[in-house]
Length: 382
Ligand SMILES: [Zn+2]
Image (cartoon, rainbow, N blue to C red; front, side, top):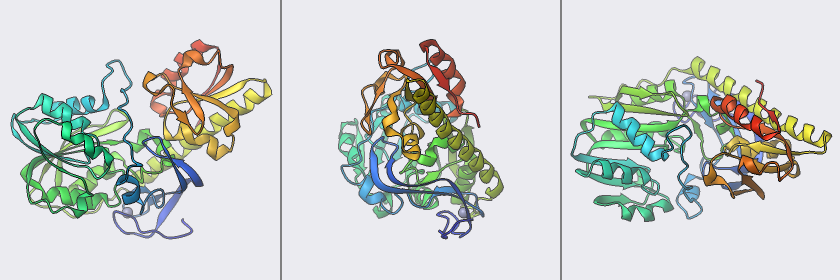
């Protein structure tokens, strides 16, 4: 039970279960910059099951997203054998899930710098595309060939009269204060039978999002599916195997307005995530302790909110020599004054203990590749 009640952003129920961690201070965002004085007040609604941060940047979205402080990070190349940009991968996934016609009109709801739209118009030059992007990324949208309209304002302030054949939403609903309202807004701007394609971080596989200031909503597959149905969409295909989940949906004749009923299911997901998050912070603590006892140095593997927040939770910034990641796109990043380096630099930096602070989906693979570097690898043990 929570000390102070806060209405669920989806169903407005007041009862929620508090989740780890209780924290207030400097906090990382999904774009990997820090915000000052952020409170983490994660909860799971006891009624509909929605998992959310009652604080974080909630209520400050407009000042965070709609100003120049919001710099979309460079595209990170996806993990796995086929090294593609996340946007290319999203497009290919959508193409495999939905029957996309050769012509039509598309609205990108939260287009960022237009990375997805660029991929889309290259593949489908017959489509007319428009975009909503309240943040600074909007400036780069002008580079998209054939772009019809680009709106530089929050969706709920826009009086768009057009209707579209399709709307795409990639990594947006975890940021918006009212995800059901956003889906209803989209419903009203789709033509009858129109298509909605979406991609979102799967909280079930990303428990580190409990430490993310701006992922104010922690989306799960069952709850998001139910939310879409409530707003009037029918799920026609899903791809839920990776860190992000993809839905292909069509607009149905009328919304069901039936709120999600995922209380039990989501609480189970939330409790498991909480458990993994604590175990990950423990792994960092073990690495620091072991390094101190052996006159060595500790490092943290990963470039995720939990990798970059563990030292705040443990108050041990001076004990982290560097962050380590295999993705060369992030080498040289400076996080709270700590550098991100490739694993090949661990020896020269004197690293003896490496804590794994990433999605559990990659623990095994990273543990085995880090064993080649003559360091003690500390894997979370939930
Ligand atoms: Zn709720």
